[in-house]
Length: 252
View 1 (cartoon, helix red, strand yellow):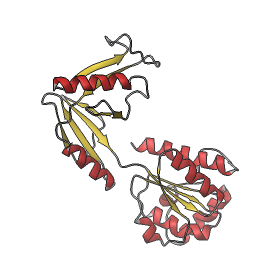
View 2 (cartoon, rainbow, N blue to C red):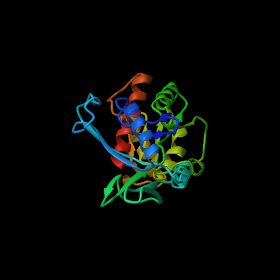
View 3 (spheres, rainbow, N blue to C red):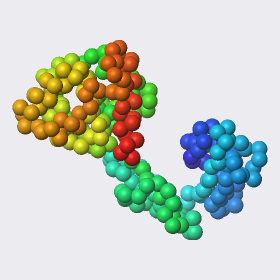
View 4 (cartoon, helix red, strand yellow):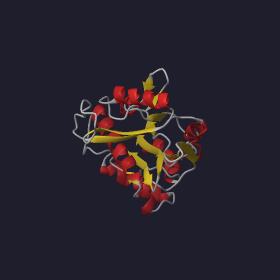
């Protein structure tokens, strides 16, 4: 959450329960010229600020004196690279750090915040399932790349990184195959393909003929999604997005 000197703010820490109070505390920190630490909700001295969930939130309010570390994080994310911010309460400063294996949280007396590029959904096909899945994915806030034209495997692979999910929503294996080759030679965190189990057997046989092994084929979620035998486009879209969201959580 960011608070300006005039009291305007963006972002959230509790989904709407405490943001006005946090903004007021941030303005107090600015007037005093030093960082603040407080607790809201359970165990807090502020009895009039209650979290409906019954929990508590520990907050560090940092006065941003140098925005360059934030700019570096934004630059890395725009280039689809992870980044980390280090907050040092002792000196009341933040520092930029490149990608680390550390998770967000305290390490001794330093708090690390790890950032990853936004999840990119590469949705491929020429069907009502594609159109509906694109709409649901955009409504959910994902970065969406829609592929509805033929593309060779090399060009397709160049659009994929480890923060990408690939969903093939075709009813034609011949159209799907070049894109599937590109996905299998890249490192997306998810590959899913529309079709029945019988269709997937044909797909697997075609992949074996062009040199892909069982380990490669096992990377494909087919039938795609979490709902067994989803029929209509809306159910398929929800099934696909839920499957991708679950896969993303497992990789974070």
